[in-house]
Image (cartoon, rainbow over all chains, first blue to last red; front, side, top):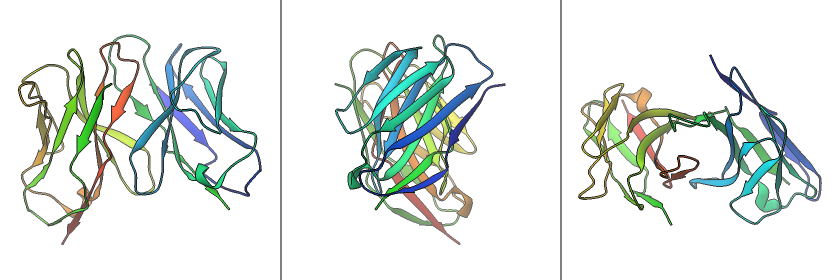
Length: 113
Length: 112
């Protein structure tokens, strides 16, 4: 069976510091991978998605970037965090073909002070 | 582009009350429709889905019917429990299936 892992679960960072959130999927090959952000009291915003190694699509221009260095690894980064980057970040995956159901990780809560 | 609109919350109900959370969508073609649930401090979990018009998705006593004529996918449950307290997200998948578009979420609070 497939599992998805995200870490760290919680993170408190000062403004201007860098960020790295990591997500890995086990038990499948060539998944589609996604990063969503959920700001406090708001819905989900798609930030990036990837259909293969090195292939990143950005949905919203922002202070963040994503990379996919390996097939089942998806990293969300920032060089300098802003207060507005605070939120709950969710990684998700789906099979590249067939069923279009997204499976989410447990999330990473980022607080920028 | 595609969009999903949900009723704003919070929705507060007493235990065993009937639940309806409205969801309407705008999309080209024939999207798939989903309801996800997010319990406090957790990620999202798929609750149910429907892939074509008139399909009914159901799970854990919740159900929703894909109504193409009204572009709706309302979530219902006949008798809610305290454990159903969570945030519920309606979503649609584009025809290529690469992206899910989510509604803003509706917080449900069930009181004993």
